[in-house]
Every structure is written in C-alpha cells, then in structure tokens.
Length: 294
Image (cartoon, rainbow, N blue to C red; front, side, top):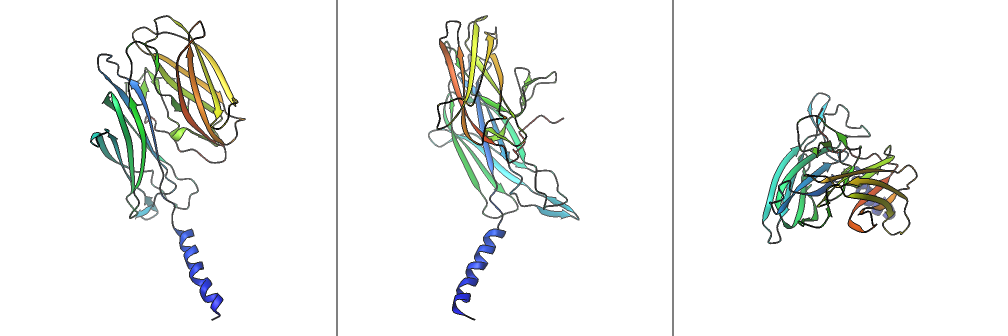
C-alpha cells in the first residue's frame, strides 16, 4: 500500500467517527425574579425555566418500534459561600418515537417557582443524558433577588412565545396575576415566530398614576431600533402593575438583540427600566416553551 494512502486512512477513520458521533445535548436555562406577594418578606419569587432540546438526546429502543430518551436535570441556587439555597433533580422524558431518523424531535421543558431570601446567587443547571456516558453539561448564570420598598421597580422581563392570556382555572406555576405565560426558551424567536411577546410587573407605582410604557429592540452592537412599541398603563391598587406588549419580528434579521422596557411618568421622567437578551433565527425551529398541560 502506498505510504500516502496509509497515512490518509487513519485520518479518514477519525473524520468518519466524528461525523457519526452525536452532538452534545443542549440545556437552556432561563429565570425571572418577581417581588414576593407578601411585601413584609424580604425576598422574591424566582421562576426557573429549564428546556432540553430533543434533537441531540440518545434514543434507546424500549420495544418494537418504540424509542425513548431521558434527561436528568439538576437545578441549584448557590449562595456566595457555595452552599445551596435550593437543589432539585428531575427526570425529563420527551414523547416516545417510532422513527429516530425524524428531522424534528420534541424538546422537553420544566418550570419551577422558588421562594428565595434577598441576596445574590448563582443559578446552576446540570444536564445528563441517561443514555450516554460522560454527557454532563453545566450552565450557570447570576441571579439577583432584591426589591426596594418605595421606589418604582420592574421585575425581570419574561419573553413569551404566545401573548399572555387571561385564565379562569386554578392558579399554578404557569400563571401570574391571572395570566397564563408560555415562555420563549432562551429568548429565541425562530422559524414561524413573527411576533415577540413579553410580560413584566411594576412595583411601588402610585395607585392610579398614569404610566407610559416604551419598549425597543436593538442589535447588541448597534444603536438603531429594529422594532419599537408604546403603551399606556395605570398604577394598580393592592397588587403589581402588569405590563404586557408585543413587537413585530417579520422584518427583523437573524442576530442577537437587546429588548429594553422603560416606564415613564406623565412628566416623561424615567421610573424604571429593564432589559433582556433576544435571539432571532428565522431559519431554524425554536424549542417549545414550558406550558400548562391541557
């Protein structure tokens, strides 16, 4: 065998193995912090959203023409001293497949509502594919739980895949202030998603106070708006002032963006602002957000 061919064969085998190796599973971790309904409690409510893409999980045969995947997800809220204020492990299983060559495999989502004391934390998510060895993925992000008692203050922005809708059913983790929220995992708006929806709460607004709500979408590295909107609200009595809105994304190209929400008073003074990261990818499908079972 020629020397050049002998040197090429191991490289060909390596490339073939890499091409055949399944991509690593993906974990999206989102969190939104709200003030505790009991204003006497110094802390907040943290809603954690974990979404696992079904595309890269390993499916094993469980019966003839029945294939199942499973992901083990550990969620933690870590204090600065390294101790856990919260820890939980859940097993997520996507729907059973009859054909593992399907182009689209359903994602799986989990939502948890936590009560945490005021402070700074690290939110950590660990994902392990139960059907693949050495497959642990760790995702971390800072988490701040801090609300004042007097000045107007916004909660985190919740990016939604669908508009917040009034619900008449019993309260659960997917409902805030009587509205059902369906999260857009990772702030991603992809193929078929032509509108961005959001939800936020404003605290400490004067009852009946006229409010102007401004929101804009800009590229992370740019200063020009690619979409913007405006709304009016009024300070609510005995509860947070709920703010919702939407933006048209039909002409927004792929890229990374920042959504800014700004609340002003009748004299055009800024009362509070909040931002959130948005990803736009109109060529791929987005994972479904955690939603209430029907």
